[in-house]
Length: 88
Image 1 (cartoon, rainbow, N blue to C red):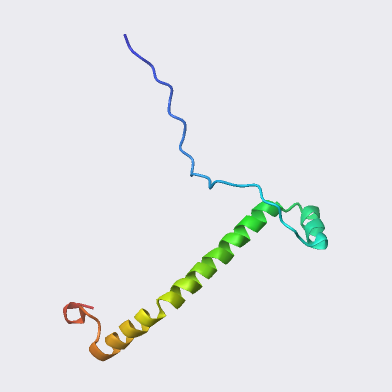
Image 2 (cartoon, rainbow, N blue to C red; image 1 turned 90 degrees about the vertical axis):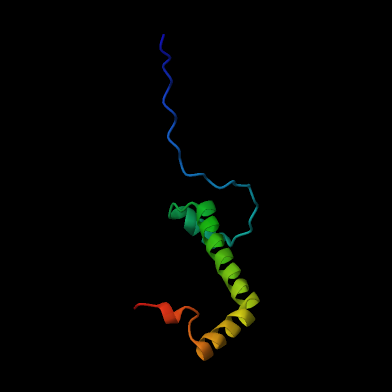
């Protein structure tokens, strides 16, 4: 007796969880976006992602600025750590 299994559904990239949120937007911009057929939620989500990523990068650089400066000073004074064995 053979058992036939249904094929597994194709795996799709995991979509981030979403949460309904209220926003206050300028009426003229909202109306223009709707007239252009723009998906306001998608545009806001994409732009907010970019802003969040920029701010996270800025904060990381700020939090690690002392270490980066010290490392750069060391490299300037002593060269790269494995420079002796570099073949290029």
